Image (cartoon, rainbow, N blue to C red; front, side, top):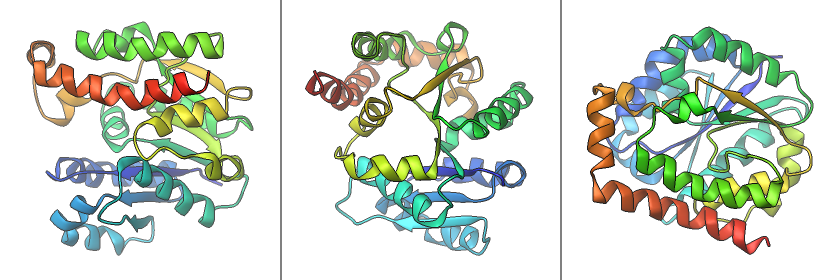
Length: 252
């Protein structure tokens, strides 16, 4: 049985919808279904595109309350998937921008081989960025995220890409930990790994490159320089880090 893909989906501008539509044939080749958790503003801005995609039985959409937060969207995506899938089915918890990028890149075949192998593992598998992948990111991204990675190393006893973007886990296992997830923000990413600490395996991959230049059709060097020199971007990364660090430190 093909695995399923699980995608929290926040896309006010519509740029991710374009990527989703572009790679849907490839997603169908790899996955049995796509569980997509739509944020309230995405539904408000793109109801027609959602309705059109919803006619395809490959997609299973769930919609979130107006006052819900990003952690709620992750959790409702996971609940939708575990309620619909057999316990032994492999679920790929990931982000559409990164998946769309790698499927349209030179890393496509390596990505497909890696996810097929991970889908056959009984234990959860976390894909992590290699030094080569990290080198593609702006400096402020790297240095800020590595603050959390350093804290996670103390807790896990090894390098762990705590602000992860691709985790493979059996539906039954996800269902077991789901009631223990409390964060309504990005802290949910750290919560999941802490709950899987004793059983998770890792795989370092080059294909987890920085996807933004491709997604936004920008020159990578120009965009990297722009983000590095942006005070607003640095503050955004620090704000994003805060809930992850809180979960890690609260676990001590």
